Amino acid sequence: MTIPKGWVSIDFKELEDLPCLRYAEKPDRSSSYRLLKEKVVDAGICSHCGTCTICPVDLIILEDRPVDFDPKKGCMGCGVCVAVCPRYNYQPISGLGEYIEAVAGKSKRFVGQDGAMVSEFMATALEMGEIEVALFVARDEMFRPYVVHVRTPDELLDQRITGTKYSYANVMPELHRIIRRVDSVGIIGTPCMISGLRKLQEKVPLYKKKVKLAVGLFCTENFYWHELYDFLKERGADLKNAVKTDIKKGNFIVTFKDGSEFTISVKEMEEIVPSGCHVCQDFSAIEADVSVGSVGSKAGFSTVLIRSETAKKIYDYMLEKGYIETAEAKLNIVQKLCDFKVKIHPYNPKTEECEAEEGKAEEEKKE
Image 1 (cartoon, rainbow, N blue to C red):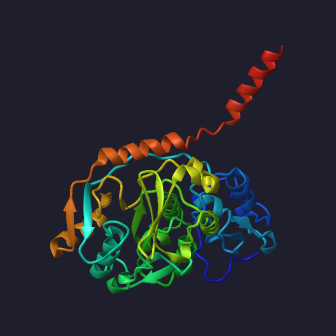
Image 2: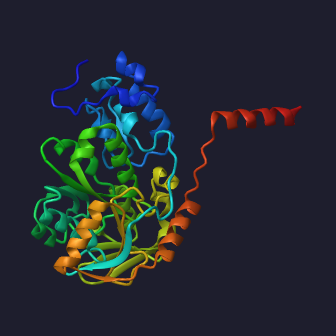
């Protein structure tokens, strides 16, 4: 099987530590994806980040449901899906992470979830020429997420583009689709998506060269859109009438067009939390260039953790132009949420050695 024309090639030397390297040398049509299926998807730890959709034969199906596979397409055995998956040989990360500067900020130009700092960062990056296009998640009339290309700051005045949707969106598949067509791109994602991006940049140089800005969102959990929609509708909150969704102080809040609100405890939504979220411990998007969220800031502001020199340059430009208002960020509150996520999402996978020891102990008990 030959690699499809136009696919982003990968240097197989970068996959030497992976068991599927042998398939890269002698392609087996049913090999690589089975590793991903068994070790990540079937194991219930897939984050639905979508990084693996770099698959050259489109065997991996990423829709509004758990990741699936179409073996009829024929796996090349290249191993790239395993190589870029942040949940293969998963080691959780947690905490505040490293940062250059921490501040609470509010955009003077845009209206967003809180301080609209995600919009401001991307708009400023576009204005500065740091990126050619930004991938944003917009919503339709049913609050269903979809990906849009933003090329000018004025496009971010559209309220359907700004704000949090709390549902999975196909950002990574769209990044794969356009990566050869643009010179530079910025993406916005949950912590797991940012981890997927970094894994991708480590393995495929083209992504390191072209993805210039990664904005990470504070995140505890995410949802499949259809499950979230049905769950809320059953309780009298139809998202087709919503203008905003938010999570504050342990409550999921839906604001409607008429100004009314629906509130439900996040604990009551446990039944629709995907299994992959249950093992994620990264609240603050540690691997992003800049992390943004409402926790730790006063009403109307966003907490901003600037982690890279690129993000610092963009932030300094905002200050110089007077695009933002700043205040103090209370990082102790952010740290509490980081610790809380670790507490509610324990992840201690058993190694073969541990399982062998446990089996031996059980045998000794029987004796």
